[in-house]
Image (cartoon, rainbow, N blue to C red; front, side, top):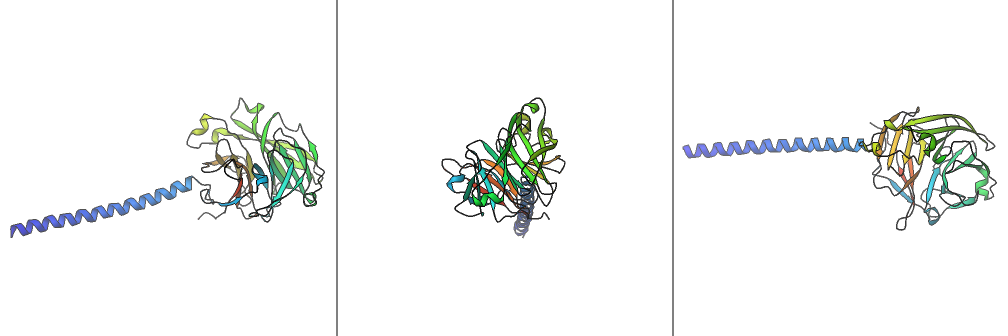
Length: 299
């Protein structure tokens, strides 16, 4: 009888131990799921999942696609330019072919903006080329250019804000920023006749950018910027740093996110629904593309 009692006690203890173990495992699974969710949120700006894009592969002409833009956020047609030739391209997202028109000779063109019925192309040395949007479909473009409106440097990021009706440029690498922790920016009026007139400036404090502490090791080199039409936040892209930085409407940094799995992110735009588009240059193996990140209102 004593043996039976001892055996029953051992069995009972074993069952309790297994039950406790299962309870702990369930708790661990819940904790892991919670941690995974929190980690995913930390890697993505609110409303977007950077790991789950819709990919639009670009035709060969846009292997070196750089800047992209919409006209008033209309996602039916996306306008683009590439690094070397003086052409503006336009297509519906998903099209396998593109149409184009020439606006200038070969040059190092970096970004495109559309506003007030005008197209503006930014060259890396800060030179602007502007022309009416209506001339693009006709294929006959007569552009005007203006330079020396900004300090010497390298410029890649430009955006026309439909709210303020202003053109914003952020310096990638400028002499005046060498001894500071800032990236300088400039604000322009864009006339309905294509004239570009400087009206102000702003600064982005690089010290506020902290992506795992890595920003302390190198300078921030912006390659594109765009304003979210829903949240009014500025999204700033850096191809070299592989970073997406988000600021408020006063350029105060609110978050920075590492870009993983991107080829060479060079251009960025939002449509009127708040969906985010990032263009990537291709290489010998992969074609250029535009990645669409659909907006989902944070819960």
